[in-house]
Image (cartoon, rainbow over all chains, first blue to last red; front, side, top):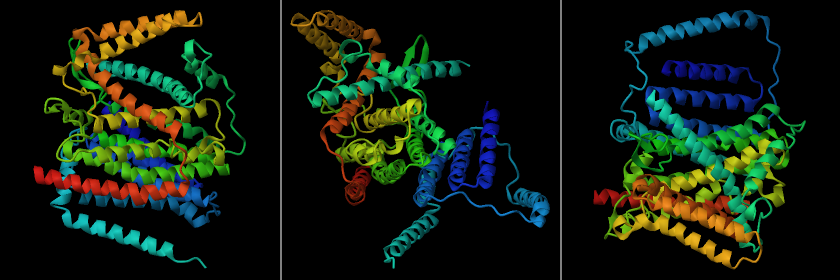
Length: 166
Length: 396
């Protein structure tokens, strides 16, 4: 059951990601991105990290993507116009992509810790209390720095928006 | 395998009751608003219009399903499904009662109790916006688009106040599981005052309850905040171009949203399935006496009925009420029925409040709505959160 669900959501995630690139209309792409986020959250759930799954959905699918879609709808942008692909990228594109994926996986295998056996639902320590404790003890400085960064970004947006349009 | 079977049975029961409730909620709303405006409301189908929902369902199913030529087909069809799907899921996290034993099986009176249940409900609720947003956009109609833009902006704004109002009682409960939140509110002060979060020391959550209710009106797009479908400016708002079952989908999603948010309010602030006053003072007999009283009123009216059919329907319903009272009077069934009774009563009062407000208050202007959210509700919620966390830190 777990394995079946894993492959189902993994397939949905990859399918949505490919669809995101292939679609020409921004709304379709944005919806595909939401599909990716939600299926990633489902994968977290399968591993047993409920809080992280919920946070993933709230932050990405619920907040950031709503803003994206809101802006796309407000501007009412049409479909993207595709230019004819030139011969070089048509013949070299796919092989180069494969090479990049291969290189990436080699590097990842190198960097990632030696693979322990991963079991579904075996992940503990991802509850709200654990995450909160870590945020306010071990990662306090990065947490506060990020908050200040976001605050600066918001202030910047407000200042830019307040400028009179000529 | 036992677990799967049990879950399927529980899911079937909850789904059946929930969907029936949704259908009858619409009748209740029309009836209550009608009585507020001094008219009888739906009256033709069945006694006092009681079979109206059935007729409505048949009407909606058999109506022609029009897809206008100018819409974005994919998203136009997907949107109502999105709306219904994400509106129906959260009910599986709501606790209707504690752990009980039925036929030798011990189980929670709840579909599933996640350790982060509340966050999950918020997460599902936050994706629910897409139904309305996409529906309005895909309709390719300026009124629909305006409606869905308003809806997204309004829901994002009020979600802030709502989430902070939800976070405050969590400081007292110290858990995210809805079952444990309810249990944290059991017991009584001085032997009679329930330890619900709106009464709980050190800082009663009455303010965050009020903020929660106000934000809940906006989250469910209800009057006085029903800007997305403001009839007199936007025709029908986001669902202008929808008909038949697709329209019914949005309709159902709205009512499911009301039920969900009222259940969450009940669990968070009103003590969930805990009784209003302790069993020592006789709270176990409340439902039986309530239904007995209802039966008495019905019989009394049957004696004075002027129309001949009232002489049949009133006693009939009186007998039904008597039967329910008899069921509630059996002590053996109390562990199963009483929690559900208290839960439904509290959630029902909140739902009635939603309908009552709709019948009473006029609609806000859009800029007033936004200013209210950002300049009043949000700061008040924050101040309340700070006071609560300070007091909790001092006490513990």
